[in-house]
Image 1 (cartoon, rainbow, N blue to C red):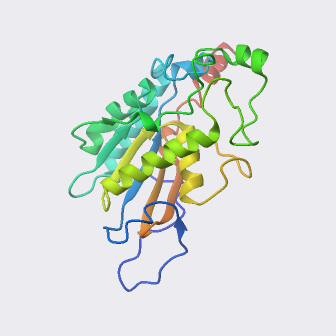
Image 2 (cartoon, rainbow, N blue to C red; image 1 turned 135 degrees about the horizontal axis):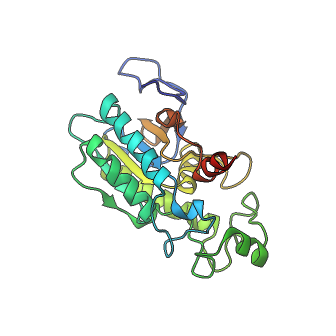
Length: 258
């Protein structure tokens, strides 16, 4: 199947000219294996998204029917292409949210992963107990629209996690798994916010604002370490396997009613 969103070739072999580098992790690891590959996969469409609910760790109930179809498409693509399978195997992680765990469990056979390692630190920005489970309309009525582009240390969700705290959590989790699995392939089933945090950190970008991302369900975003602490973005938002599926359950339902 054709792959989209690729922005660079694989890491150079010895003797080739070093590429433009991007940095982020593991600067203290002066002697370690290079070629670490990090692939971030956003979960399939979730039930809370369809129901227009702030779906934190307390109220997430997993994937919608379309979300399972998206994850199945990705599983079949990965099984056919073998694009993530490497000699020696890989490590498959998931956040603790049901929508991410379910996605990981669906794709695991295509990755020949023996198990899914659940790491709560890869969860989406935590809205806190007061906001978790509110409908979008209830949240806006009580708190107004979130200002994601402003001060990362400010309040995004009253009683919940700030963008700065979220950024630190995701960065710490990435640093830990990269150091633990240096030189190998790491696949993480996670969330759009986590991918946004990771991209900003791998590219040494700002904590908030300047640019906006819209990461598609079950898309692949990939980075490879080309020098110690230096990373190259290989692809972002690669969702070629979703061709022909509805963009969302809501749009599919509206189309059916038209």
